Amino acid sequence: MLLTNRMTEAPSSGPTVRNRFLQSLTPDEFSALRVHLKHVSLTRRMVIHEENKLIEGVFFIESGVVSRVVRTQVDGAVEVAMIGNSGFVGLGIILGTNVALHRTVVMIPGSALRIPSADLLELMRKNPAIRDRLLRYVHFLMSQKALIALCNARHGIENRLARWLLMALDRMDTDVVPVTHDMLAMLLGVRRPGVSEALKEFAAHGIIARGRGALKILDRQKLQDHACPCYRQIAERSFWQNVPTLHTHRLQAD
Image: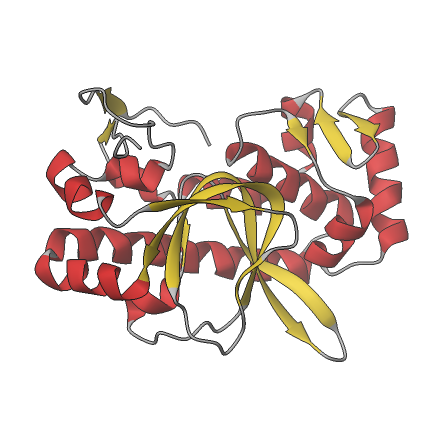
């Protein structure tokens, strides 16, 4: 999903914020959050929020890919939402439940800016504009979840796999996706041999190059040709359609 939003510059101080949701905040809005944000590393398979547990912090993703997964003891887990450097995790805090309905897991390592839940709740109370911006993103993510549910129920492995890879690309700054066949099978709710066969076909058509624990996307347009309509609908129902300007914010210097 290509962003065409106009960027504004901020005075130099600490490291530049890479999360696009935070970039959508005005300088005054971001200033209210800035003092509470702490940089954290996201390692593969790290559980950010556990199902039915209190949400102690909200994470604005700076890099990497995080998945919300639904699971049962009988059927295992399947992905219902994907979050990258355009969004955040910890929706329960925004909606006032304070408890995670689903497990949130890091699939592709990266980093995030964490704010304690209590601090964000207080900021939302004092600043309705921040609260409204957070709620608009929640609405977008709910739409994404509905489309992924439809995709998992109606479309074939190749279509769903292409959709997943394209979504991952949109949330990263590279054409190399560090993901395994087993991980993709779990996220899509399918058997590993089906994923391996689909990737073999993509490689044969020059769409991807397979490596150990990673896939390199060689031809994005061909990958889009294999994706189901769900990918375009997810991309078009974007939070960013109503964000005309992105701002270059900086964290406090150490």
